[in-house]
Image (tube, rainbow, N blue to C red; front, top):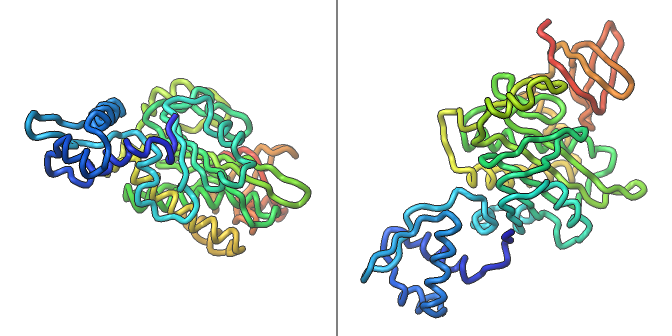
Length: 334
């Protein structure tokens, strides 16, 4: 496990290599500039190489960074991140049962507001309604701890708003436009590329904290995951962002998402919900479709008309209007 405030010497060495990656830097130069011993420089270089960064070493010339690691280490996330709160503290695990479980353990502490838990892979990833979320290496699996100001009555809008933020981030970085499937899935050509999960701690009529879970099929073997999930309830296919033409680094997508999420979060906190609903609706694959829903109150069929101020789906069925807060949805062809 790594976090954004440990290993300050290692991060200093790495940052200096990154900002001077067109030249070789001698061990003595690094020692003098960073005010650490040459032995410490050598140890940090070795560790940096172990973490997946490619550092070339040449006698009489020194060290040169050739390429960065693909891992989403905390110092990579926080470096030049243009947010005030979200993502300014980060924890990275090479493997964990669930980032959501870890975040929930930390969520009560006010100092963890905005903190991210991110993992290269999850062994017990969680989806909606307690379903399994297969989370191999190559995906982006993260949870974010938040202490919101918004009213408990619009808690159900937050996952929808978060899906919108992720959609905007994908549009900006990868230059494709995912569709938003109610309540909180992102799809490409009808197949899921990402999902959102929210767990919350409530006291009386107040939100103590919420934990936003995000799973993105960034660079995964979609066909292999489909084989595993085929036949499971409401399964409608998996897609991977690496199948798209515009390739970007995962760190670019994560940082852009955190920036867009903070903007959306502020809109929710200040009750500017109409803008969120308008932008979500523009990208929705659900609105205007005939749908079938499995809810706690039974099965409902009809046409999806809109989402309400709190994110509830409004479905019209033979002049009867149903307001659905939660449920599994299937888009019908007719």
